[in-house]
Structure formats: C-alpha cells, structure tokens
Length: 338
Image 1 (cartoon, rainbow, N blue to C red):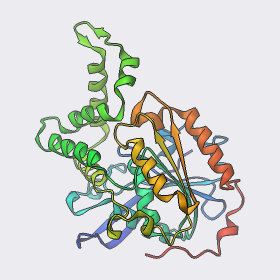
Image 2 (image 1 turned 90 degrees about the horizontal axis):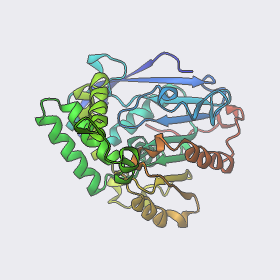
Image 3 (image 1 turned 180 degrees about the horizontal axis):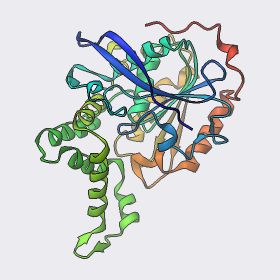
Image 4 (image 1 turned 60 degrees about the vertical axis):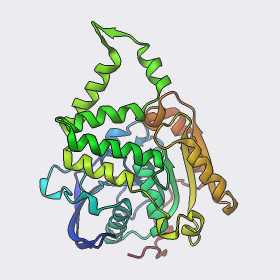
C-alpha cells in the first residue's frame, strides 16, 4: 500500500526556542493521489513512523475502514525519528524542540503540498497530542480530529514518566533497550500482564521478563538513541494551550473543527480521567464527543483492540460525513496560514 518515502526541506525553520535550522521531513502518501479525494492525516505514535499500513494494517488499506481506494492517506514522520535512516536528518539539539514545533513544521509541509483542508486527522499517543497542537495553530485546517489515547497536554504523570526515561537514556549502558523495557510497564496494564503471563516461568525466569527483554532488543534494532531521546522529550513537552495560559477553550475558540476523543479505560500513560475532564470543559461547544475503549491492555489498546477502534471510527466517519466524495468540494477553502 505504501509508496516510497518522499521528502520536504524546510530551510531556516525557526523553533519556539528561537533556534533556526534546516529541517528535512519525510512522508508517505497512500491510496488516492493528492487532490483527488478527501485527505486523512495519520499522526504516528512515539516509536511509529509514516509507514502507517505496516503498523496499523487492520484499519488502513484497500477495502478497510481507512480505505485507500476512497481516501488519500497522508502521514509525516516526526522530524528526527530516524525512519529514513539518514543520520544527517536526526535531531541532536532535542532540548531546543517542543511538540508545537513539530506541528508548525507539519503545517509548513502541508502548505508546500498545496493542501488547504484535511477532512480528518487521526493519531494515537503523541500523535494524538500533535493533533491538538495542529488544531490550536491551524484552526481552519482540519475538519475533524480524533486523538486516541492522548491528551492536549503532558500531565504531571506523563512528565514524570518521561523524566525517568530521560535518566535511563542518559545513564544506562544499553539506553534504548532499557528505556523501552521501562516504557512497556506503563504502555500496558497490571491486569493485562496478569492475563497474558499469569506468573508463568521459563526455567527459573518469569515469562514477563523475557517479554520485556524482547521488546527492548526489538526497539534497539530499529531505533537510534538520538531519535528516542527526541521523541521522549517531545512527549513531555505537549502543551497545546500553553500560550493561552492553559485555557484550552480559549485556545480553540476560533476553530470549527469537530473533536472526537477516544480514551482507554486502563490507560496508564494518558489516563482516561484527563480526557473526561477535557470533554466536560468543552462539551458546551457542541462539537466534542468522548468515546472509551474497554480493555485490559492499557495504553497500547489502540494498537490491539482493533474491533473496538474500528467500531468507534466507523460511527465517527458516518457522523462527520466521510464518504469518499471528491476532494474538489473543498478546494475553495483557504484555511492554512504559516
């Protein structure tokens, strides 16, 4: 389904920190060609990438819910995530960055592609947080956003988890593998691990430890230390309403974008209670809906509970009128400003 990586260069890109640097964004377009069908923007999770059909094959593809026969599926790599394998494209000054900078870079790249309207944006975890940032920065760009297992901000708990990850990445002899093992303990849930392993052993070791070791080795084989450091830092920097003194309602006041939040009842990273609070804050706008996945699997349930995710998304597609109609209907919209 996926095509080869394409690249966009942003010259003299300015970060919120004031730093300027040249930036390369890799991206993939799947399904219908640009400007021939409604666009669905998929923003990937922390260790994901622009090859969305590979890490979400149950939902993205020909004849599937996100149907590449009907839609144009656009997915950028978060700059510096290393997916293109080019060392010069990594981001080593990661502390100069925040998630709002990524949203700004995406907006500029979207403009370069001649896109002024996107029917729907969908993203999990940091990808969902990124959609909130885009919504605040570009209030007319997106028709609907669907943040899954995400929040518009990094809570104290998220910041705490990322702080420990940073310490591991700074001090461990095997930083990526050990950080990944630690992360898996809050990506999943205690009840989910009990159901999966039930304290079973291989020889003298618990099976759960072998599972953690496997995930550590697997990520180390495909993810570099600079990429992991950056992504972890970006996660801790999520703060879409920061410039509005944490007043999210004010931050999105000029937008008509529909917001369809999907939380997970056992999420141990972006806890569902935070999304419920956001829903209560915004429900008077009449354009926000809240959905909850029931799962023992914790934060990673959005990559596991495919039937529930598909059922919720199908209802959203119907409610928001995503029918695969020609994109020409939106070509007169001039919504993006960078």
